[in-house]
Length: 344
Image: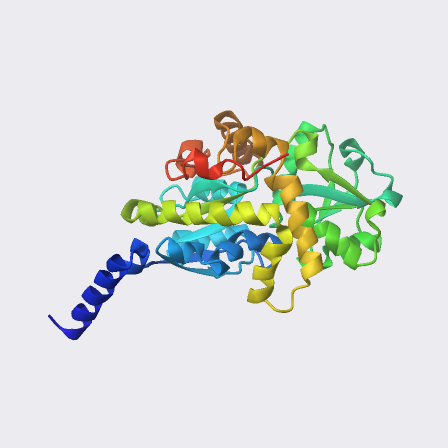
């Protein structure tokens, strides 16, 4: 027996002798995880369990990287560059339907944003108070914006006529609305509202038309995993989801504590601002009435099927989205671990 094997045997025996968790006696499983966006408030859901050591205690060596959009996250997990990620379910559905022959299409394994965070936003001075008022108006958003992509679903549900779209860089969206270049925009509610305020708008002057409040029950962000990881190491995925759920419960109960983990990862974040962003996300898409009805982490089969059909039509995909192919509940933690995460 060489020195390396002798050392490994000694460490394993020592761990067992002192009653330490088996994760310390066994090799840890590396998992590369990519977020959908930057290290902002909602990233606390993942950074907190990492900082608290919950992943490590489960025998996982998790590295978490910032992202630049759900589409990129889905693509990188599909390419094998990442093992798991956090992405909009509609983006995952689109990838599946447009890449039917891809050998490594990611699978959604846990629901986090039970409702889409997309909404139409405008200013009171525009006179727009309801979806029907958008007919004939000039709307703006980046071409890849989730709300813009799903706007045909919103328009159909609310009998909105033709609108005129303007594309721009994400950093210019709210600025263009405030200076009158646009009548309304689409965006993520808990991000765009705070951006409006940063540009000088008062909260009372911003009109928000959330998709979920106007008949569009699309799901939002999910945790995705590569089919390779699911097949070769399903236990690793189960452990990841259990550790995540433990951390998420603490973050939902105490957002300010969660933001401390974000601040530790990116020292320049504004803790007060990001705590508010996180609380908005919790209130609107995580701890919503729909989420409490489905149960944290789970989906409603009928609602998932409807979304698959709506995305197929609105995104004009090459093939129809198969809800059975994009979603699996097989690796979710036991109900006992998920109960109590959401509360009224």
